[in-house]
Length: 218
Ligand SMILES: Cc1cc2nc3c(=O)[nH]c(=O)nc-3n(C[C@H](O)[C@H](O)[C@H](O)COP(=O)(O)O)c2cc1C
Image (tube, rainbow, N blue to C red; front, side, top):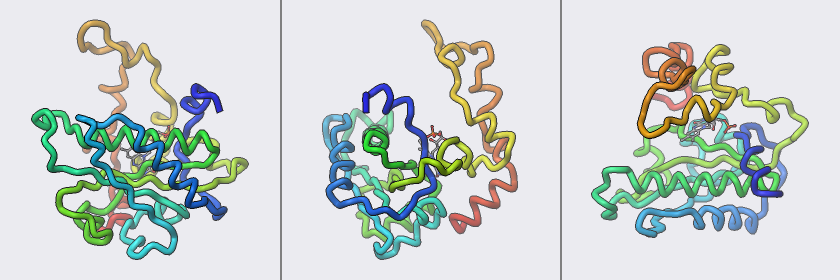
């Protein structure tokens, strides 16, 4: 697949079938992850491969993660000195790695979704024996998926925003003109960052909050 096609065709896939993904392929996906840039080139990431039979997998408590036949839990060292830590460098490094893996997954015609709707990190850390000096960054659920399934051909499960209206607003991409500022920050015509972003008090409805509560337990 040509790079541009891979980049622009990627979508979050949340519904998988049970077709096997080989260990070799999982290794290739992680290999794509470790080619991401990392602050100071520390490469302080670790990837915990989670399969349906992995011990304690159910603590992920996220329906999408639990339905996915495979997943990669990404953790990153939090105790390394990186330029004063004013920019959360280690989160950024791990995020770059996750995005690399998502693109690679798309390029080999598998599906994946980045998940942070998880229980609190301490729960995950205990279940997967993650040491104190590593932070849980996110979970990458992945697997084969049915292309003819309508749920896989549109963004229709942004369940953490909850309602139809907010889904519609978040389905599309903003245009470059709506987000690009020249020289310094200013409000742009139709700028989404002021009118449409969900904040704690507006778009996250009580119904959505209850749903999240149910999923993550607290
Ligand atoms: C940091 C981060 C956390 C995310 N967490 C979740 C999640 O918990 N559950 C979920 O279904 N999708 C999650 N997503 C996926 C986004 O909902 C998705 O990327 C967004 O709706 C845009 O859709 P697209 O990936 O198909 O372009 C997350 C994405 C990012 C970058």
